[in-house]
Image (cartoon, one colour):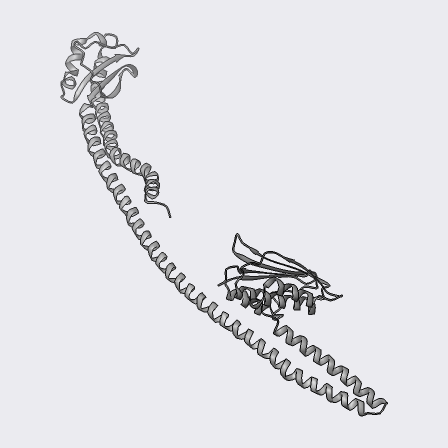
Length: 410
């Protein structure tokens, strides 16, 4: 969020030009309008006076066409009523060549006159011009006084607008800070709730995994002690029965049945060993992983193992790593139709993470469309410890499973 100084600077930058412009408009518009109108009125009055004076001079020029300009006394007497008017500052008479016709004592022309002119004719020929100047200094003084007053008013109004704008920005800042505080409070509360929920979820998932491990052990024991013992007893009985049977087809069928029972016994023994594989918390993780890879590898399915440092891995993390690898190798061997698989596992001491990568070049699959294959269980084991599991695969492009687990445990 921008700081208060930044907001103030941005507001000043945006408002200073309009504020100055508003002050200038307010301060100059009315005085300028008054000055223009007043000056126009003076010019019109001067023109009207000049036309009346020109009419008098025209009458003299009609009587004496060639000598009218030299009859100074007559001209001065006829124009006196205009020269002596209080609002008339000067009366000027020019001949047809623009030369000044002396009237005997020229009037003083003020600094700011408003001039009006009118032509003088003699027998339809223009023979001169009368100019009348009215004093415009009073108009100038009043316009300047109005300018000062209106400028002060414009500055005052602009300052008020600016100050109200600043107050608006400050109120908006206060509101924004209040909203930010509310959002931060809500965020912290939500974070705490999420943390509690995550902790509870991890606790539940951890307990679920413990129950799953216990259930796997129980099933393995039941298979070994129950089904396995029954199959062993059945094989012994079939052996005794086969010995009492005479040579022939019946004895051959009995021996074939014995081989099927042996195969079933071996399958039960394999399943029991898989379910109840030695938990790595009771032995070193490296040894458990190496033993598993050796057990899974066959002539048709090779396992290339790269094991880094695994010192100090907590028991829950070791168990999760072992089970995830076990499931990944089982999927590669049974479902991927892969001939080999690469396994990389180690401890990143700098990040405090245990990483496990299982990569095969099998037929692959679409992770978004396929459920099962033990993926949910692997995800659950990783999430229960606060880790993550990433599955990258596509049809015909093999599969890569990468698990990142906290090296220090949950």
